[in-house]
Length: 62
Image (cartoon, rainbow, N blue to C red):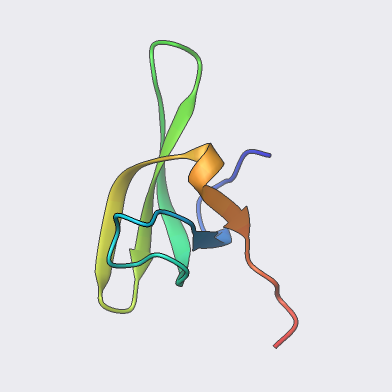
């Protein structure tokens, strides 16, 4: 599943201080290998270069 700017996502990266947090995709960057990496903004900062497999769509039902 690919994501677009302004999509709400949850980050899954045990090495990140934002692991398990919900954020917003602010930039999509295509690599020369045809993959995409993402910049995700959170309330307390942002994470750049996030691969698609570390993201899941956030549950909009709040």
